[in-house]
Image 1 (cartoon, rainbow, N blue to C red):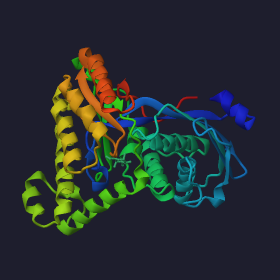
Image 2: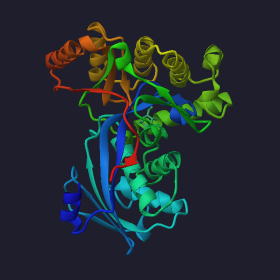
Image 3: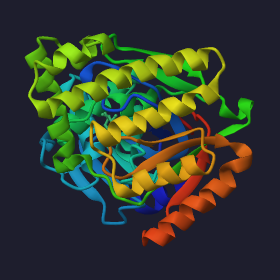
Image 4: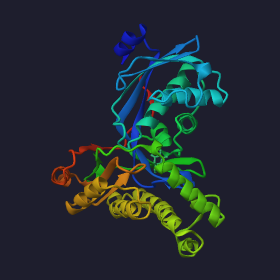
Length: 377
Ligand code: GLA
């Protein structure tokens, strides 16, 4: 990173910051419904080497983007002004200034091992790495949750994606060896020990290769549907509906909104149940909850796809305790909870099933809960 930075900008960086991608164990699309989620950080990180500038210029370069340096004036940052990958880092600088922080420019060089378009929150990792870098470069003194909110503001207000805050909270606040229990309405987060290896289990991530893009309107439509359902039910958010309310709420809603509510309400209950199991040291008990979560996303929320369903079905047929798509949906990655001894054969079975179906080979790796964003140099 240092050498690349020197090569691009002709000087050494002031420091290097890292922020991870995430997988969500359970609690999907619940964040913008004021509900619960339970993500972990994955070991794949986005790194940002950064150097403060005093002339108000913001220069951006990405190893993956491999294009020329993007050169901006921080005073000119307005939503829509940057439409490439640069919208995420530029959005963070914009969001910090919007929040009243007196910050200037910087030179940034980005390199990442978080796969893009795989539902693993590469954009949140980029935003958080930049937010943490700016926090230190300009001595802002903001804590990790505040930096997560700034990162979400960048994505909502500058990049134009109406996401919730789960991904940014995961990237900013996760710790090694734990899942992050998010209560979005309360604005709280709590570390819940998550150590599958202690029960001889492993968590596999299987990237289907189906590119997922939150900016394409489907995510916004789902969010709008949930918010409309809440309005019709006279509650602030679907968080306020309990499983016992479901039969009566169904009679108050247009048919197309009923399954959306069904998913959110049952999904919040799945998060709560998962946390009880983890607190009692029963990781294996998460298996059926993950699979039920997948069925709910497939049948009620309707955001799975053939490739993700094939991974889940093949995994379950080859001894997985549970499996589900993770993230925003419409492709991306599947998580699989499986006995360590069966993981390899399961992976081979999924790869063979993809070959038979004529799909490109999926990308598989095991993850353990990793550290959230931090300065590394
Ligand atoms: C995306 C969004 C998150 C969340 C998930 C679905 O990852 O960025 O805020 O809504 O989808 O759980």
